[in-house]
Image (cartoon, rainbow, N blue to C red; front, side):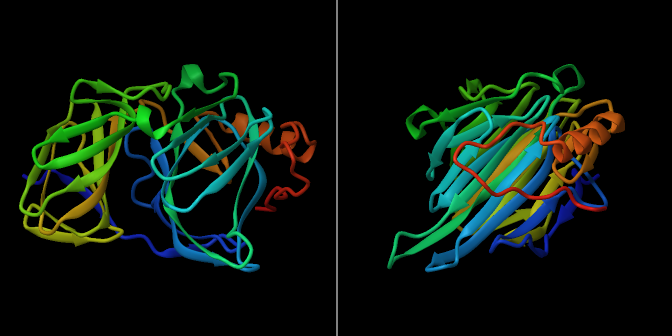
Length: 290
């Protein structure tokens, strides 16, 4: 019996403001993997001159965000007064909870070029923490745990894995890792009965149950099964998963909740400018009309 539930190869999506992504989650066939409800691979893109990444101020509720860069720099600003530059190897974790607004910008120095590439994702919060007070946590690269496991060298971005724990504050059992697996090595991890997990190929190629998957492919393991793959080349991957929530989640624009009434209320709040001003920002994204 196969342990693979689904494979996803995302298409490019232009969000405007020179921001092109490959979105794997949510998918029409599967909305979440554990608590992970949104997965964007941004770039790779070269920023130069007037070409910038400009994600103007926008709101969130009911979720937490993580930014993990492979290349480049992004300036994060939010309505709590945080202004933080993120670089490869460091973690920005923003808990939206009851509500926060933020912006993200990146541009090359005058007369230079800058590569930009990374993963941005959302994690849905468990029901008991959906309305938690908004917060922001930044983790330096030297504080991200390093795990050596059967030919793999992995950085534990968030959660717990193989007895190690990331300092990033999480609200439900999960694991989120980035790393590389040497050619010919087999990686295997048995999931708990209430866990789901997936691997995402950044570079290289893996084999899962006789099928090969290369760059940008997401392979999702069935709940409670074993996650297993072989690196056909030296391969860079993201590995993530966690406990499955018992309740359905609704997602509309930048809002996530188990209760549609909360999403309707968030729409009203954004129209009424009730998410707070983002530090050093004058631009914002209007509420979509549909």
